[in-house]
Length: 210
Picture 1 (cartoon, rainbow, N blue to C red):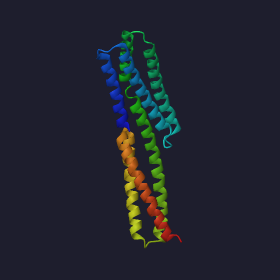
Picture 2 (picture 1 turned 45 degrees about the vertical axis):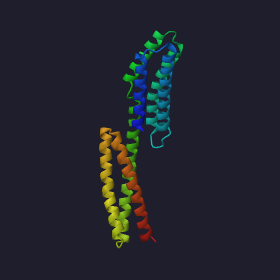
Picture 3 (picture 1 turned 180 degrees about the vertical axis):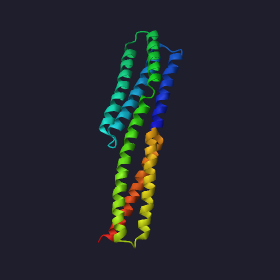
Picture 4 (picture 1 turned 90 degrees about the vertical axis):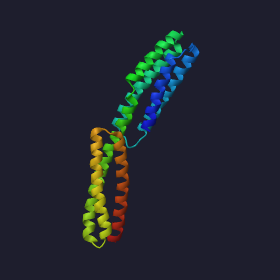
């Protein structure tokens, strides 16, 4: 998702920049700028909606991200109003240059908003995985005594818990460096591993606890 959003923003900026340099008339330039601004505003709304409606993102982060994105949208909406009110080609060209400068200065707002949400989700994933690991270890200690004959499943679970701890540590490192791509990768690994641990633990309990 992030790659697509960044590319869309770059294309928008490039499109508006080309419009500034091309030999176009008033109507054509006005339409080009308006279409570009509408696309960018739509992109902002899409990003905000996905973050706000994500149950894994904290309320605090949602509010912070919404504030940043709303400021960006408000500025672009203001530029759009100026474009609609521009009386001459020269006025449009001047506004267009302001938009280009603004987008260059604020080009990281969308990217940073996505990264903030991913980091927040990663922190929650660490908390959840550590909780699961602790509960699984406690249950496994009991089941090893109650059902020592289930050596294969017990060994599998022990290895999975070791791997889970390693993945949690890698996720913590990614969070420390705010590496969004690695955070997402480790979150997926932890999700899959956690599901497998839960399945194996349930299977062991079904055999041992009767």
